[in-house]
Length: 349
Image 1 (tube, rainbow, N blue to C red):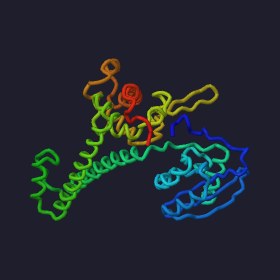
Image 2: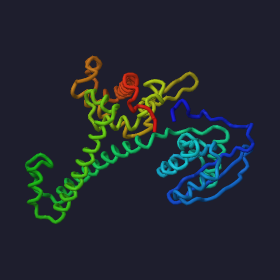
Image 3: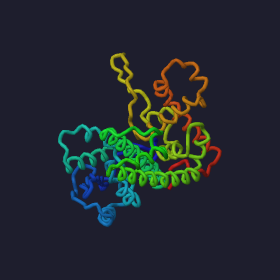
Image 4: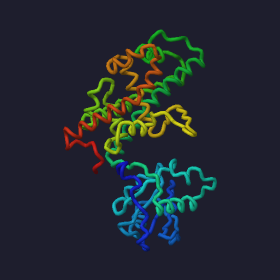
């Protein structure tokens, strides 16, 4: 659902039979409630998180019924089942203040608040990407997690060598010569660490092969790879986290979605600007900062801008320039949509 459609549903006062179901999702079960237009609870039950139970719950509702669920780690599978027959509203728990700031948090209280917000039309909705985009998003995140595991294992080896006061190996860390030097150390733990490192390294290579193949088949990713400093992995991560760029009215909104805009507090004619909001995907902010620093380091992009502020520290310069990348992404994908109408740049299943 696009950003312009968020909150477009209204309270139906002229339909006394209309019901407002809500689900509070957990790992094993979900708390469900069915509320009418007058706020009277018609049904309240606990449902086990099985596909057949959710389908039975869906079958008991009219096709025109809107169902609200809270965004969580278990919501996407439930959404896929319910959206076959109903319009599903995914509530943002951080922006639904009645839930985020509540002092009394129980399953029954939260599910009643969700139903009441849906009845009044006050749900702050979260964007629900297509299933294909979700697959790509999990693919790039899995690759990033594997690289972190590899780095963690290398740090453990370094830490263990320092702990055992081993003789320093005169070679670049984790080069062939360094690995050969590690194998000569007479210690039971070092070979085990090396086996784990080799196993993780193999998984990293396989994951990046898949990412490279998927990026080569995605029109949006191929367009982004024409920008210096953006590789196949960076391009696919950006595309999978944004995808439908037409949800945003301008590039400033896209930068705000990525959490790259400064926070602001204005009261009584006095305005304070703070650090960036860091709202949204941390992966999106991480890769945009990474790509920006590569461009600054290599001097491939924004040459006229960087020459004007050459005295600034590169890290500070990177923070100033990160919001520029959403503008490039915004314009690039819009140009793709105009030049290739059949390209997958919108959220169509």
